[in-house]
Length: 109
Image (cartoon, rainbow, N blue to C red; front, top):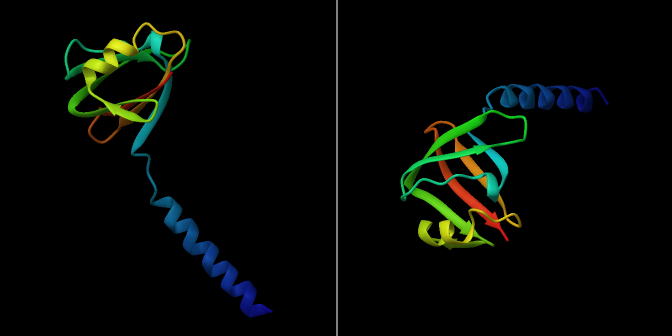
């Protein structure tokens, strides 16, 4: 019985030390498409508010940023044509904290 308790304590200790090494590398924001401001081209700055009372965020997009509509990859031109101004669409904006860029903008219509 003592072996089980000792083993459980050792495993708990290992899991706690492993958890201490975790860090946040990305953040995801759910944004109404109507509140998402896209740059004029494939690169530039995306502007949005993560919530009504949140401050305005401006985060760069790059040529590597992926645009997705209903689980289908699209180019930035198609994304901009179909999404901004839509009250029916919600977007998930994935922000890579290390590079401070948007890696994915995913919309559901």
